[in-house]
Length: 139
Length: 387
Ligand SMILES: [Zn+2]
Image 1 (tube, helix red, strand yellow):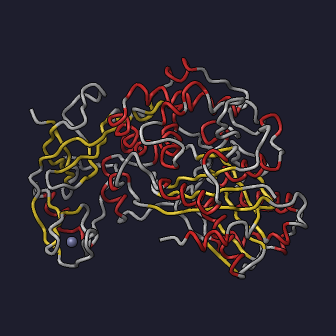
Image 2: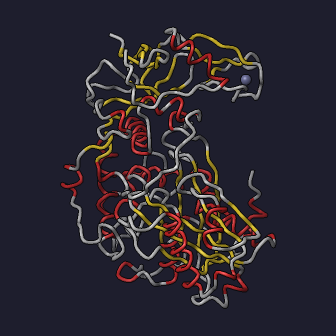
Image 3: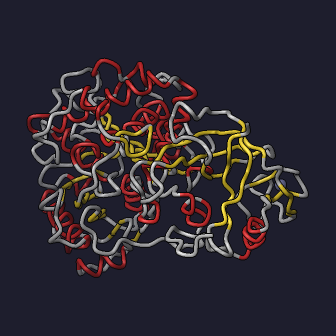
């Protein structure tokens, strides 16, 4: 468990408290509209698909596919100096939404990463209070 | 939706009469960002033959117009701090025209100044903002990482090797233009295809030379009525068409990573101007990355989706080629302080006036300037003509 975390940490807002609390519990949660049924990332007070304020929380299966990625060689922030090269990604969750993340547990090599490859969420406990949902290739 | 019929009435109702950079560009640690704004403003007013006291409207991005107006000692009667990234200043040209046509003001000053290289205190982002909350913790920070992910998706959809070749073509042709511009950072430094492919990785698929420069620089534009443009030192360059908009802020929320908002602003600007792609003599397209140019050409409608690599093949965009593109040397090789968009308008104006020196086009009657801001988030397009 890192106590000297020097990377930017999420600062939760009232509408995202639940998201980050659940991530710390090892759960990836999303919002779904009670009116139109569409899911959305990230948490908001309204539905971006129909404008409804009737929003419910659902737990994501954590199953995703790789939508795109980059392999970062020059750290864009001092906190990532020890991490390069690392793999940033946009993943597409089974629930139909895209979210930013990292792919871990794989060589940071363009030939190892395949767009469309199946991924599963894992939680990286970066401080005592904060866990980041990241993604690992499915064997 | 924009009312193109009414926009057509607006076409040509304002003219650019002054353009300039700050006194120095590149590494300028001895000047603050506001000093760069001010130098550029005074130089652009001088270019127009106008005085600071003529200015009654101020437009800027990054900084607030409050700060810039106070520093310049002016009290504008129309104020616009629209700040949507590097496209903002292209958008300001259109806003200035609308404000002038509506009667809010007569002499609009658009200023830019940034010490991208030497800034002592960059402006921080609210850590609760969605981008800081959901992307920064993963090291998805800043343009190279975000644009690289968009580029990788493009490669997936349209082919990696041909995309790579197109990026090399753009890097090399842009450098060749910079080699003709004495103000360009890389004026004296050629770039070969081999050097492109050997360049180190910043964020794969981006080599260092796929990425724009990070410099200190300022620029400014003066826009006024067609009547007052007649008294300007060099006459006026009429603003014929414009479009603006955005469809996301952070890259993970971009609806289609291969289709930026230029898909709307390009066609709108051309329609408003009543011209087609073939009528254009010059395209100034914000090149934050080689990929930005490739995707913008498609979005703007110069070619279809996925056709960009064929469109830019064989150095057609280089000096002497049939499709002059980014003749100042672009953000890649001339200057890029952070929000480069204003420089596309500066160069287009110079080419239309016939004052671009060694890089001057033989014919330049109609030019398009296109800015992209944020993380492929916003675009602003203008079509400029000759008086
Ligand atoms: Zn809904």
